[in-house]
Image 1 (tube, one colour):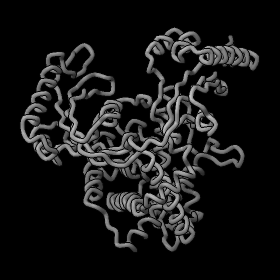
Image 2 (tube, helix red, strand yellow):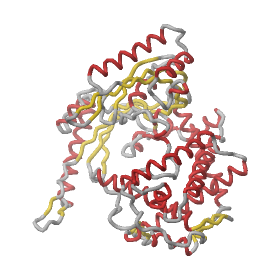
Image 3 (cartoon, one colour):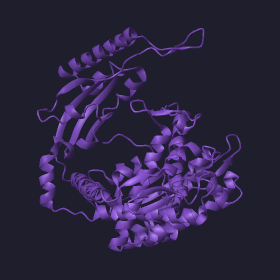
Image 4 (cartoon, one colour):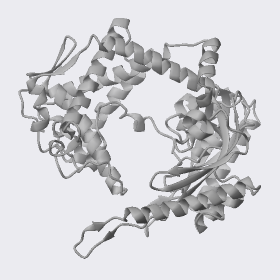
Length: 517
């Protein structure tokens, strides 16, 4: 079983709007990070050239601000979680160093990233035009939805109008029509890139050849692991308010103690003690409780390419034998004890599949104490009963995919799939919640199987139920990974060949953009 993933609620179409460069929703959270320093350059001056295309300061500033705002808002979110990305959000990008070796500032970095994005969009849009590829209906809808959302975000930001909102983010020369044009190009570039990648196809012989050369990364592994963390002293504050970090001697002593615990656990397992039983003797009390579950940290179907870098090299070694166990140092934090149990080319596990769902959302009651709207136990029970009734209704009929789809259209609360009969095509196991993955990709799962699972919010509260119907299986996992790797190589080779014909350069006007943001 794979390590559990956090629960993900079904994503509506509206929630998928902002996948291109487009509107930066997090700007609202980040309080319009760099809005107060507009770009006052000549809006019609040439700021960059890509091949034989010329781009104005407004267009280059758009990409610069998109990159900068996304990065800065991410740094703020990390900071709120107690993590440090190395970026000081209280300073401007030009006031702090990105690369100490060459003296590059964050402003330099953002500008280079902006130029790279501009080059990519230019190359792909040109290639799309030459091939006669046009924006799909879904892409057109995405542009329309983004443009429709402008009003909402202009109101929330207090900008006063849609164009004022855009200028707060992208510079005072940005217009609504230019934004729509650039958004459209970005979405077209993404669509065409995917289409081009998908155009590379491979025979079973091609995949077999790739497997023979990359078996270690495509095989599935069964193993157990246990982290034994070093008890390194926490930093303290002296009487002058200065942070005092633990000494090298203190850190080394803690690492040595963790190493001794790990070695002792390895010895126990080698002497015949069950791995999880041995683990309980060498970890803290809370973790030991977890290891009373015999399946805790027992991995049974992890591809070599997805293994943790901590133990990937050791597990994928061709000399590995079932039962082998070792201790691996985790620099500065402790040791990991790993036991190899098996390795095989798994020809029965799938990476993708198609399923249908019917969602039943429970009614809610407002709780004044914590200001939440959650279902009561009775409301949850009513939703579960409704889901069970719908499933029985389907089972009493001809019980086909088509009839399930009709039932979904008439009854599902999932707006993102209801209109197309609850259909979820080519669902990828890596992008689904653990609740869905555990059932849909179970070893004994068969096409036509059904079940009812809970729907929970981000806090784990049950908010409803989903009826699931497995319609068909897609690609075998190792073949899927092999195909993706081959496509990546072929697409990159194709792109790099084109890239040589599209040199991207900034003019003096373009190089000055960061200093005027």
